[in-house]
Image (cartoon, rainbow, N blue to C red; front, side, top):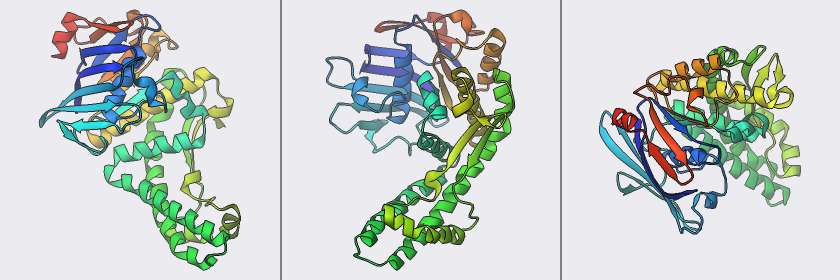
Length: 371
């Protein structure tokens, strides 16, 4: 699945934009504050119906405009498709695929996989474990779409168990009533744990080399740390039983995959606590590149990769390495303040978009190459 074109209206600082996206590398260049990151966000929003920058999606609507709209044209072996997402604050999103309303884009085969690197995403390295769990679950869903339901089933079982814990705590039912939900939670918990472990094992194969190539000193490692030591659902159910009295006292489930952790390490120490911001950026970029390689192997094509301000902290050799890694038959969109920071940016096949506040100008030769 390839992204061919981006159209938007009243999104962030833009009234209207209509630009082609290259089949390989697309470079957004312009001064700081011109709106390059806004375009990356629009691409992500058009492919996922979610913002990659903010939980307050009202911020995406241009000042004094009632609503924002993003359209993304895609194509694959079966032909062309159009994804559209309209957002008006206070109203449900209006999501369509080829003109037909859908509830979400994640189930549509016309939606390209997309990976994004933003400076703000450093929270994935140094923030709460819940962010890393959510990211890992998104990777599992991208690798094996049929397994995406395991996470949802686990969440439903935990919600039911927590509701029952409240009733037990209030004295309305006995603790034995938790047995059935312990078994259900354990069943989906082991499935979820195994999915996550399998995904991390795949990513861990290339992560150390990529981190080294990008300049992260020391032995880099990505490691999955599950909360449970159980191998089978019956063993996890037994662990839940051991903690039942404490769960009843506190009123929620304290043990299980919802407490798992994804660790990014350098020389055995967590980069979350012992890495500089620059080292954390390199580790995040290595993680996303490792995931891209795994997705390419599993799904047959690389995801669209959106990279914001990634070149500024890399030296010339590592910039070249990164561009070479991106030259794998997939698409990538890179922002920069200086075209000279992107090796090969002047090549005829590269689409170059010059960004200034409120406007985007497309290099004519590059536009012809994209077409």
